[in-house]
Amino acid sequence: MRKKRVKDTENTNNGVKFRALDVVIIILILTAVAGVYFRYNILDMLTGNKNLKDYVVSFEISDILYSTENYINVGDKVYYNNDSGEELGTLIEASEDAKNALIVVPAIKNFIPDGENRAVEVSYPVNTRIDASGRMKCRGTYSEDGGFLVGGTDYLAAGDKIAVKTDLVTVEITVTNIVAAE
Picture 1: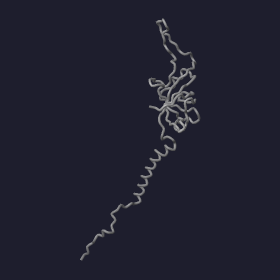
Picture 2 (picture 1 turned 135 degrees about the vertical axis):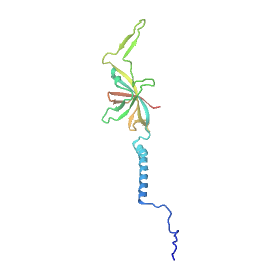
Picture 3 (picture 1 turned 180 degrees about the vertical axis):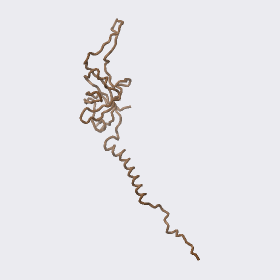
Picture 4 (picture 1 turned 135 degrees about the horizontal axis):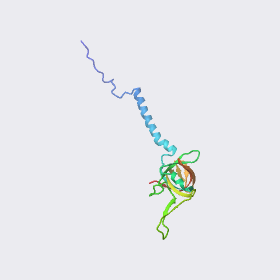
């Protein structure tokens, strides 16, 4: 006669079995999560980029050639004119209702003298020097001592004179105001 095989239910393990491949996959997933966390939190905290916001820096330019305004446009990147050449910001409209990057006294203006019926064109002589004003958008933050830090590192305040450049022009600007961008 044949003996019946009896299953031994007491010795079977119905639990989860981990193999080496399962452990490697779990370690890879945990490493990826830690890497993403490090990139977006710890690294930004260490470099100061976490709290950066957009600010509008108003400035004035003194004693530039009147035709220089033709080479400074909205959207131009502004860089420090030093060895680092780091980006300072991007030029925006000089005022809420302006379309140009700079506000200057017009180089050519038509006006009608009192009591006359004709327009007279007035223009700057060649090599005339003028003053201008403008604005740029910068990423930065305010430090604990109240100073504005461009990019979280470079101190900037109203009254500071800075040599800057765009792709076409190099000038010195005087910062007049720094406000949060809307």
